[in-house]
Length: 295
Image 1 (spheres, rainbow, N blue to C red):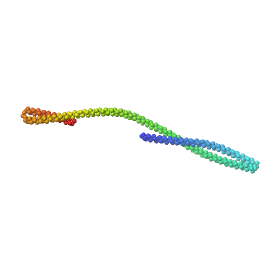
Image 2: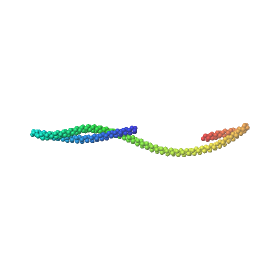
Image 3: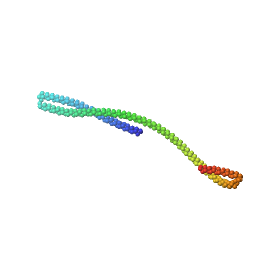
Image 4: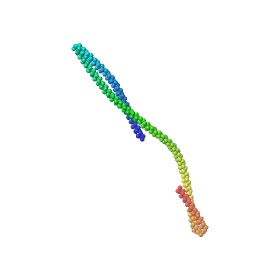
């Protein structure tokens, strides 16, 4: 999502730069057209002044030419009516030739002025075309400027919206970061407490282990001592049992010999009871011995 927003932002910025470049090109073109229009206007004014001057000059030349023709005609008529001489006629013809030459020169000047006027009219047409083109470019420029303004407003609104969204995201991120930092601090404190507790338990466990090991060692040693004592007692009991069995065997032998003697019978009964008692004690000792060996 962030990558898409960045791409859209880059696209908008590139479009904005392109519109801005087109706007600058349009402004430059308008300035050039304005300069050309100003130059054409100045040239038009100069041409209009020249045309007016030529018109005034041509009018003066025409009036002068007609005046001179009239004067010459009057002089010719006066001289002819007065019967002029050949010299007067030659002079009149010479003057007419000069006037004709001046007329041709003035005609050439008039044609040159006419050509200049045609050029001026052509330039005026071009100027009008340039003015129309300038108006068209100006309208396009205004349209582009309006589009540019609308695009800028749209970009501003979109950027304001995105900035608001980003600020909201930043605020949420800051709140989340603060909550995470508080959680981390609490967890670190809990970790310190747990580490202290674990160290205490480890020390206590070590002491308990040492105490238990020492206790078990002492108990095992006591049991070993007891086992040794019990073994010795067992050996003694075995010896006693063997002695009793020997005595019993002897008693039985005597009992066989003294079957009819009641005193012997009672003695045999007593020996039997002793034998049974010793056997029971022997069984008890055996069970104790087996219990110690299993432990």
